Length: 354
Image (cartoon, rainbow, N blue to C red):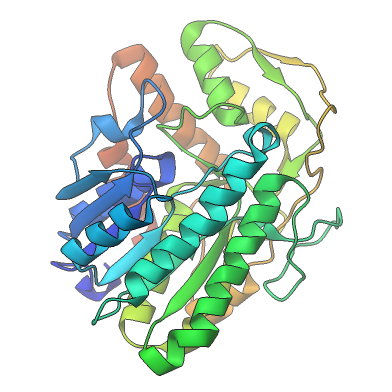
């Protein structure tokens, strides 16, 4: 995979205890990378991170602690960095706007500066969000050259993180050989996510506990995809940057194929087909603003990187439910099995990174 470029490479993941971070850590360990994680302790119980093989090194600390972060980076001397540490919830950002901006903006600046001062600089893949765009409720997908902005504190802070990354690269990238790219992924689902206010998590938890999931925004449209989809894009982009290809120091969208966007109601209805224990009740909540329609245009990743999604939305839902059903009914964690299934399907589809 990825030309074996990650084998024995020192890879730093910020936010490695989170949902996407734990899946990424697991995949990198399978490729025999030397993985270092920097994050807060997991904040949910249960949590995916605790079920998996730990990274080679872990720092449990705040990304806003610049001295601690810089010391960790200098000690580990990473070659490749994936920056996922963030306050990642829209509704939480309304409750803690200042903290959201601090973590997502200054946390990004802290990481980039910690890496920039190294004699041998790593390449950096900064994960922002599909919600960084100035949302106009368009019915077509946002492209990487569309205006960024964001309405709520979370979305706006991710737009700011994009600007911070662009500024660091334009200021220091070519002169200091400091390669940075940003990734904007669609709504991610998959096993092991217990963060609050996420529809698939609510559906799975309610089925596991024999309760009813509340649907706040049944008509909201999102580009749903399995967690392994954007991770394959991040890893592909990291490989290309490590090969010294500065033309990839720019933003990329990673999402499902065109016309795969579905409403929350449709997602729930599809989920019920795979797990009859799922029960829902619609209670629309418009007290705070949340984007109604969001599509991503991923033509740039398709054409320039050669990246393509492997599982469609229906398959992503099926695999997600399979993970949680095994967890709640059999007390099994099937992360490794699902990664192997994904790799087999990627091979059949001719993924460029295999």
